Length: 99
Image (cartoon, rainbow, N blue to C red; front, side):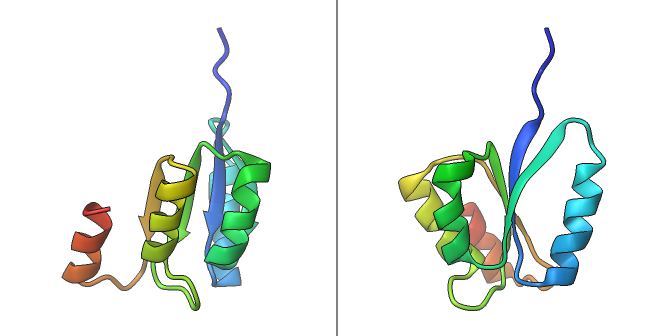
């Protein structure tokens, strides 16, 4: 039996970081990057269309941050979420794990 690739939606407001992540993850045969969004609002619009298995989101974004996006996703489209950031403090970590 052949297992299908994990469908991943990337959410990152830095276009450079988004491009790097997309290139890195696209090299894995087990991962299919089905879409990208540069903000939480766009990600919420894409989820019903793309039906990703996993969402990888930046924590620090303008408008809707990664925590707010995670809360909205878990209410509307529950699925695994990987939260990434290059600047995290203890409160952010605690908040992510309490969702």
